[in-house]
Image (cartoon, rainbow, N blue to C red; front, side, top):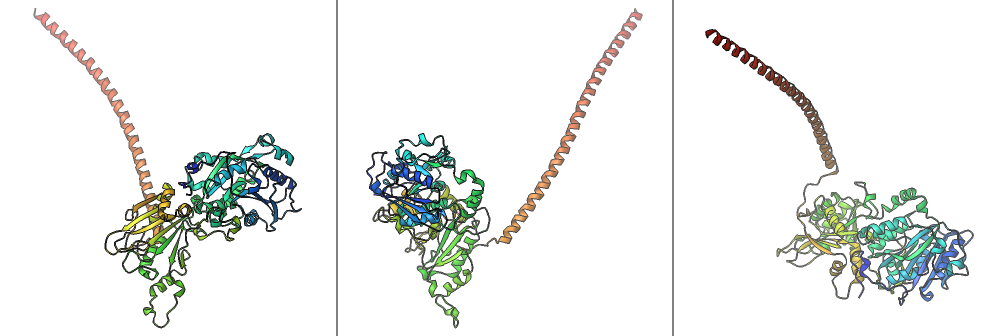
Length: 585
């Protein structure tokens, strides 16, 4: 039984300890190189000293047009080949090596990286534990003088030759702040770096080779496609290596990011922060909505079940939503749809004609004979890397697919909310209950009377992983539940309706924003006026308080004077009375 890993939590595996592995998998180490023969010699010397069996190791050096041409030194692994790739570019060189590789595992290695003698073994112990792993070792960047190849091959500890050195800072930071890539699986594919990463060859058969259209960022984009093929990414601290000198990124990070981000934004939907534009389209959309015939209504089963009005209600609502990063796929016998010039209203395919005509020039709507299947990763050891297809960027690189029956209308923010749920909670499948009962409804993907009507939001990586670990006779959704999780939600809660509503056009939305901005400005002015009035009242209240204090003082003075006067009056009256009494006597 193939080991099942939930999300990217590879900690459920227990790989053999170093020195205890009984190996059976063959590894192809692909080394693209351009010039710098001296560093290549050290790289091959490090490979010659590996503890992983030489009989299970092949090394493919790809000379990417060096002048003078590179040569193989005497100190190298026994099964080492030198290929020539005259087309410039690291991606072309790697693809040439990938096409020639025959191993069960492909190990990328830069020609200026020297591996610790147990590094390949540290990688391969993981690949023997599960057939869908991507393993990356820890690089350190050394400014040390270059030793002789014989010294490298004889060294028990490369640290004695190359320390002090700097760590691969961003990789170490990524691993540490994500608890070893287990706490945030959405960024795990960033671990795929070409300096010292190994990949099960069957994953390449599903994901395709490196994208040669990219100037920079090829490693990250390749990692993204491997993730969609079901890969689990493993950082391996026991695989240690030294990069001879600083990397280009260490020297020029800002300009490199500027260039790579311009390209990878078009190909990696998971980098949402690179897709901040509110309306533009991208090469790889964030979600594909497959509108399926039927709509949950009796008599709408099969491809011929499309009804123009139902399809338009669904598709228009999808395209008008808050998520513009979307593509719509309509499947059907489109090849037979043609113009009926004599009696168009009697055309049995009239609904298909209307659908095709209405969306023929909408770039976000695609017409297909059938929905592309989930990528199937071949069985372990059954397919060498040489069987990798030649075209990168398969259609399933779209990370999410929503299967939605025609006639069911998502709300303006429905897709975005469902995607937030799937992404934030890591679900592989979100099933949306649209209707149920015995009224002749059918399921969103077909079914019988009495079944529920549902939509399905599927994560490509989850279904690819499930296809790898699936046992004979097992339901695919069950395997998805084991590896990523499945949840049911209520369609009405998420804004689905069975009838089309009034769509807010772009101009209407602009006017609404303008009115809202005007109202905010008005309220801001009113608040400012009220603040000024309050300030005046506070000043007036201050004056009143000061007047009150002064009045209290005056009242106090008057009270004292009155008391004194009373004493004088009382004394004078008493004196007068005494005088009168004295006279009478």
